[in-house]
Length: 199
Image (cartoon, rainbow, N blue to C red; front, top):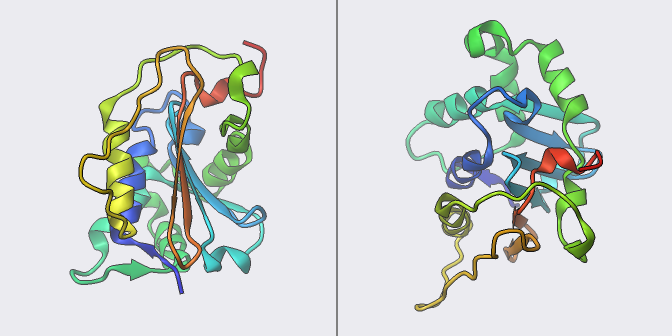
């Protein structure tokens, strides 16, 4: 059975912002209704699909970045895999320990309700999309490498990434594992918060 593992969760936290400008992005979004997990800082999006654990739940959950990072630290040495329930249980139990007590259940529910529709920024025919251009960071390529290592994919020697030009269409990398786990990484030339409004 495919589960989240420590390396993968650690890798995708790189796509969760650390500031509070758009507070609803500052966590891991677990969407049971649509069977996916997402993390985005508005410039880079990581989408995880194919986890069997997502099949049984309902609704959506938002787990703050501090809760995610503390959960990773709390995992015993040698523990490589865990289930979503243990992450959510940890976050519920430790709410008041993070962000000076701001991570109340009400705050997390509000963040889950305000999380953007990330599927709208995944490029199929993205040429017509509008948005504010931004510069790409090399950390996003490291994020892709870290995800691949976490799920056991090794690129052949000499493989390189083609970075999109500024103001070009988004770059999409799909990483799949034989058990059905699918991770999509999108590096965007515009901010994800713009997709629900005219720019």
